[in-house]
Length: 320
Image 1 (tube, one colour):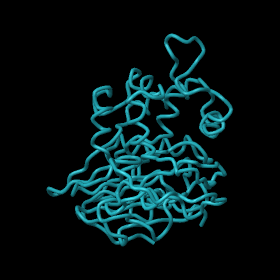
Image 2: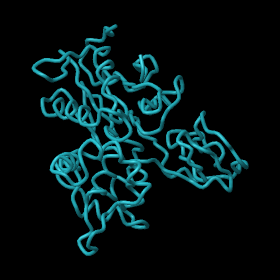
Image 3: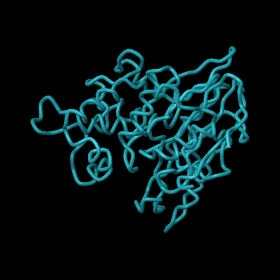
């Protein structure tokens, strides 16, 4: 069924991770149709929030669909951590023969396997898509009738935007220098990029949990949108599907230095949000609803409102 929204606006679509079928079903529900091989809407456009690749079975098909929309003007896009990782995985250290900014070890290869299998490691097709990833902006702002919407993959932090901005290319895109600097742990650019495309994190004082992929986590993401979080226990974001929780997060005061205080709404992906939990506030919503793990592919239909509302979220299941 197609929703009846016809007012001009932007439909922000969450992390796709190579899942073409739910993407096409969601575009259909949102009222888009293929015209001359490109998905279009008579009055609206799409904004993709990043993480197009890895995990799913339709890597190249998703990339071709999204790129065609971007180049035709029916969509825009911001960079996800999986696109950045793919670029770093293909970027050589100039002074370390045979080594790459993102190590080609077993763990990293496994994360990229679906994408690498689809394009062929270091092939012409691989390089073709890496070069396109380098043209994707790190963040974006959309304006409509005097209203503004911010788009970024994981966290809008003005302090961290200012750290990375001088090293980016035109249109807030990746340069080789930026990729290399942002791959050196401990550098300010590395730390700021982690916040922007993965979200701020904090150690849980000895507590641990296992995430949806079975990784044991001793750090948790911080709810940078939660104004009334005054302690570590209140601020950490532990997924509802976490298992094997050990210990207890201490109820100690924290300085939520990434707290979002702007009146401009922002939409992110990345967080595997649980159904019924978003928007997280009237200014922050997440459109990553775990399509890659059998959840939903979600979109937020923005038409200029400055307070985000749950009724504007639309989603389709990963498997109909």
